Image (tube, rainbow, N blue to C red):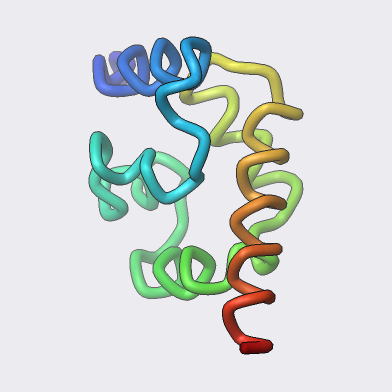
Length: 91
């Protein structure tokens, strides 16, 4: 399968600081496409999006591979999103 060109756009935006929020990735790449590329059922993917703490390390590593960035970069985005979601629930 050829790499989707939208991943290159996401990579560039992450590297330039244009994407600092995990969910901004999905302004470029539809969640359904990302879920399919990760091999995750769409409904399960949207549950993970709603609660980013549900993403597995393996899924984070695969996302990073698809985007073409270091695993730590995607992990950091997911962790920050998870913290925001947690804080939002506490309020």
